[in-house]
Length: 465
Image (cartoon, rainbow, N blue to C red; front, side, top):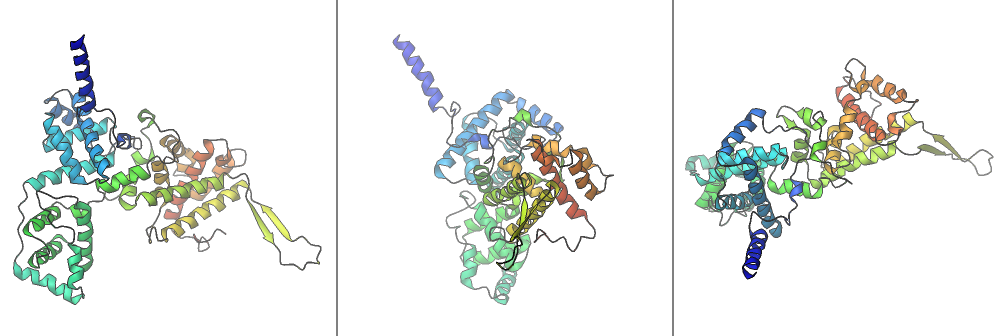
């Protein structure tokens, strides 16, 4: 009996304290799981087959996937405790535990694991890209050996600083925060480097050579050590300054925006293949609308954009809308002081649509956005991200044939659709059809406003009448 108890305690200890046996995390791993994109743009069927073939040489693929994903959860767990989601810190924690667990940890195998995770919806497209860029940078840092440029070239950068009246203190501020950092110890410097590179480009202009000149000048002025310089030049060589999203920003959006408005989360099997986020990509870089949203906006901005669509839908679905006119009449007159005009359902929609455009312009000009344009696609995508709408509703809206038929004139689509169902738009039918109709009409309105060759001068987005 004693031996049996000892065995039981041993098993419990393994489950509680073994890295691979952990079943709960301080960090919510479900945030990483894909419930937004029905189709991945990060790999092809061929690359998935190649990844599975390569990983099969190391053992059972489901086993490798589950164990490595559990290790990723532990790495996030440690970063969650520190409240600091640094790209390279995450990867080094993850890589170390992968090696100790005897799992494949070379760059090629890791990228294959990321593809398998994505195929299993354990992670989304954006996180695949984040992981790939971190992994590539980590292995580049291991073999890094940058060198400084010639002194005569440094003089041109110093002259630029004088011409633009950039003083020593301002230039030194660009390189603050890199003390004691090196290729071997990069710390949490990626986000800081992206800001530094941006400041340099504001002074000197865009280009790798110009940033290298600034780094070399900082080295000559003892603002950087040779170790600091080597780190920044490795970042520069690997185009880190042009990363569109870092781990810190990605996690911030997930925690503060993803599914914040959702009552009951979609299951992965609920995702359908013919949806907006899967079919439509932004050109020329081929970004999906969701990627574009993450790259351009932060969590607060995404929540604010989503709230615009919610407000627009509530206006469209209001029980009634009316205009009250208060007359400037003498008190002794027998005429009524007020006149109330009840808007028809279609007038209500049109007013709500114009109020939405006004809201979009006002929000883009606010201090939160500082002139960043907000499109109708951004409204839809932000609402999907926060869970205000889901892919099933969006897919239904995209399937309304009359709205998307290229042979039907654009303005006629809205008026015809509004009159098809008992003389009013489907936005006034019982849920979820009201949501579907409003989504479709709002999105179509955006398409029309972009494609109209000769816009109506009376169509001012800053006013609603």
